[in-house]
Structures are given as C-alpha cells and as structure tokens.
Image (cartoon, rainbow, N blue to C red; front, top):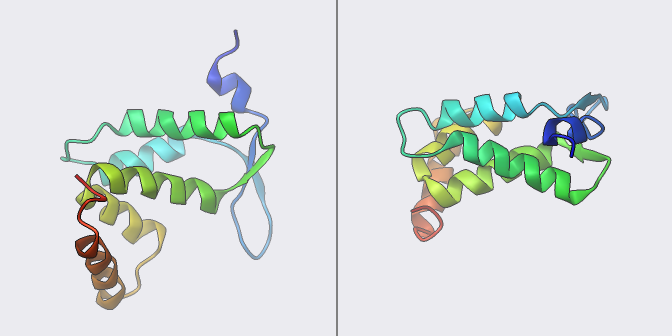
Length: 116
C-alpha cells in the first residue's frame, strides 16, 4: 500500500486568488504553521496536520483551494485550543489592526464551547 504522501502528490491547491497558481500539497507547510501556532500549548500539531492530510485524501478531489485547507486547520485548532486558534488565525487571516483581532476574540468568547 502506498504511503499517504505518495497518494497525495496528485492533489493540487490554489494558492493565489488573483492569479491561479497550482502547487502540490505540502503537509510540512501545514504542519509548520500549526506547530508555530501551538508553540508552548498542550496541542498535538502533528496529529492535526495528519488529520488535515487524511481529510484531503478522503475528499478524492483533484484540486483543493488553499483557503479550504487553511479554514480546515483553523476549525481543528478552534476545537482544541483557543490560543493556538487565535495565533493561527491572526497570521492566516492577516489581521491588520487590533480591531480585527478583538473581533475574533469576541467571537471566541461568545461561543466558549468551541474551544476546550
């Protein structure tokens, strides 16, 4: 049976909204982003990266927009750890000011059951 990495080589992601650029899925890129967000947090970043990879493989789609992959990572982080979620979201969504950051925090406070 081929490895997940070997199977996923055919899946491509769109990475630029203005100009479509197709690149091979890179599990390490997801893992690195999640690991950075989870630094000094009780969250298994490797497990999250593996879950994302499995979900992508199970979708059987040839192309997956990078936006969907980022949203999937945020969804998984939000369920596990609010701090790691906000760290990831602040980079992924490119928070431009404190207002945007505070809005995201207010959303978390409004739904405390989302993150444990």
